[in-house]
Amino acid sequence: MATFCQSDQCVFLTSGVAMSVQLSLGARVRKSPFFEASVESGLAAASVYNHMYMPTSYGDPDAEYNRLINGVAVWDVAVERQVAVKGPDAIKLAKYLTPRKLDGLVTGQGKYVPICKHDGSIINDPVLLKVADDEVWFSIADSDLQLWVSAIAGSLGMDVEVFEPDVSPLAVQGPKATAVISNLFGEWVKELKYFGFREANLDGIPLIVSKSGWSKQGGYELYLLDGTRGYDLWKRVFEAGKDHDIGPGTPNYIERLESGLISFGADTDAKTNPFELGMDRFVDLSQENDFVGKEALMDIKRNGIERKFMGFFLDGPTLSKPNEHRLRLSQNGNKVGYVSACGYSPRLTKNIGVGMVSLAGLKSKAPIVMEASEYLYNVDVVSLPFNWGGQITSRQAI
Image (cartoon, rainbow, N blue to C red; front, side, top):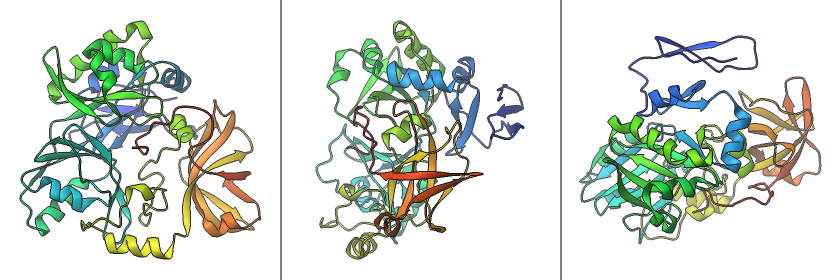
């Protein structure tokens, strides 16, 4: 069982083996502005993401899941760092970095944008926020995207500054999130469209309110613009949500599976391209603008893909804990893909998973199995998201 202590050594969650692993706190890995408040709220486990400690559990996975599905949860997602691009060529550079067409993007609007290398492989899937006519932020997944953006800007001689601003998101997610956020800021938050955002001030705390978040349960992200006020913001949000049984949580492993959300790095590898992930609508090959990887993506589109990101129903013993590595999918003894994440879904009352499977394997009538330690799970391959009748808003939906 994991414990957490605020000293030179902290003990975090581990695997299914009977041991614990210590993760040292130090200056090399940064704490978020909400770290102290998270510890006070019972932080039990963390990982490292974008060179920061990322909370992963408050010790009661069932309660955290139920809070997200039925109530309201607060997530420290300051690890969702921003790569700011500011200057006369900011919009021009943004258009060159993504295959998604950005013509018509207005200030106060965000868009989900895949970022690809020249060979068409995806290296990040951030949300792009246009915060001014000459400034955009890439709200990134786990990778050093700032280095890539700086290199592209420099190689093209673009007139921009690329930097990490003092911005740290705090997510408020769940069906009661709107009640909490409107209590803090007023009824205008209900008018925001998905990925729409607006600057605000809460008791002297500067921030941006965005209708967004890595779940399909609805919610908001509060982009804190002053890292010294993280503790204050956390407390104000909890105060506003006390009548709604607000509590702490983290980006939820099971809910993301149920919702079919892509986790960059977990679900992807060095060769993954947007078409394999079902991101066709975010790749506009007909636009006049040139962008990184355009020729390669045109070739991939013309030749077709060989594998696809899919969902899986897994028939076998209940999966009681997350998998720690990718699990092989086989057909007649031959590898046809992998399961990148799997677990038991309370709402679907089944084991489910997501991962990559070859189109050849999909076309064959031979059964597919997932190889998990000493057991073979029979696999039923399905399209994502899973059909369970819930909401359909997601960061991949806009």
